[in-house]
Image 1 (cartoon, rainbow, N blue to C red):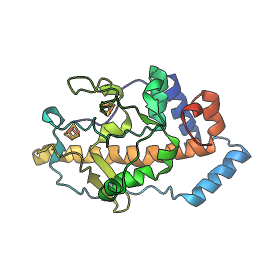
Image 2: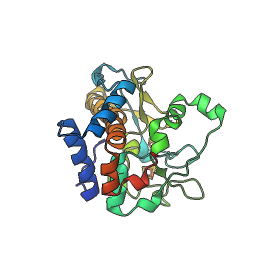
Image 3: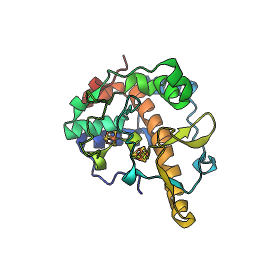
Image 4: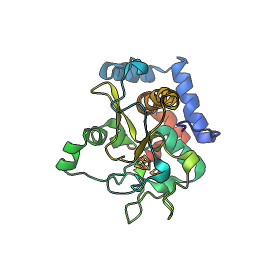
Length: 236
Ligand code: SF4
Ligand code: SF4
């Protein structure tokens, strides 16, 4: 079981990663960028929590059993794949931009009440700014084949990579999406390294990548415009 993407970056993704590195290295910023960053830091707390201190809200030995799953999570009205900036860059590199859309589904109050994570997602900055993956008319993901397999498995978006695990920020824990009911138990020695990698991957996806997206779209909007990425986002 691996959450990482062993894939060489294309030119657009390299540009995004290099912009983020430049930001992290405090490379020279314009006054406008400094002003925007100052405002952003007043609004959001970017202090990274210690991932290892966040408990799992499910048995450590439980892992999803995708190989024998009879209830594929890549289909249905609640399969909403919200993309990250690196996903959008990768889709540009791959020529898959027509598979992204800002035409997002809406959910009724009963659904949102039953699924607090879904509610949090639909109220987030990311939901407003970033596209989602298209679905076909039968509500399956555009990349799902007739046999129920993902046709872009090695390049699949971040959120697909860590599903069904989710970061429960309110409770400072790592949760398990109720949409996945197909799991199995593994021996403790197998579960330990998975749990460690899981902590890292979930934090990377839900925390670091989100901070990266928030910072780059807010502080470096003109750079994203020059790169040709801003057109796929909705900030203004
Ligand atoms: S529902 Fe769970 S077990 Fe089934 S494909 Fe999705 S993550 Fe895997
Ligand atoms: S991209 Fe692949 S893993 Fe993600 S929802 Fe679509 S088919 Fe499933």
